[in-house]
Image: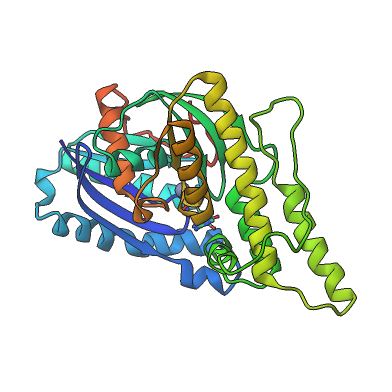
Length: 333
Ligand code: KG4
Ligand code: ZN
């Protein structure tokens, strides 16, 4: 089943053609350079750029797949969660396309598609498994019971892991998107120089809290500046990265032990983090767990993962009529 998938939930205009789990083409137009000037995504600009790019990106995806538009069996689109104006560009375009081609329209939840990125990298991976989903907007530990069945075990109480990285990186003077640059600079840093708190959440042991860490970084920088003291950004970045990874890894391992999962999957933009991958590799090897994480090109936002998840949604009958709407927030289940 050939699916033309569209993703416009944040600052990437993406289209892909997939066939089951197979990716026939995947095109991503990133707006990151433009948003970098402002230090973060400007929603108005994001929507406008999506509207300008979407026709060309979809055409490119179809051409690169070596097919014609008439050979498409269905149109899939990310409809939630994300920036509402940005999502609406993709949803409206997909509705128009599905109507004119007379092909089914498959709405796809953004977080479900991030998990599906792993189905591309590992053709034999199948649920059930435990997933740590960490992106710019979400940090969840999820029981993936089936391709379209999810149970949230733990979640962040405040900021997402990616948001914490991005905001702390901004305070450190690193470019947007901060998480990527913080990860790179942390490689040369010593995580034992600066003291940062180890946040805990008392009533649900699987939940996360990152905003205290972010505030501690901002305060530490401020205090050093006031005293006229130099600060080592690599060391501070390494400390923050270690604290964030500590929390992500400890909670995921605890949940997998308590719930009896031996298959652990990472997903979302932050699953590209080198320390997270490295340490999870070591932990899973020592516990005899199998670990899965997407190829780097499928960690961040892309439409190939949307097409693959759409394939499973379609099998469950999750198709939409022409009144499909977009939602800024919507739980995964
Ligand atoms: O999944 P994603 O592309 O978009 C959302 O759905 O939010 O995730 C973007 C987030 C950003 O916060 C970005 O800084 C973070 O993923 N990120 C990273 C790395 N690469 C991307 N964070 C830490 N280390 C990385 N290597
Ligand atoms: Zn995303």
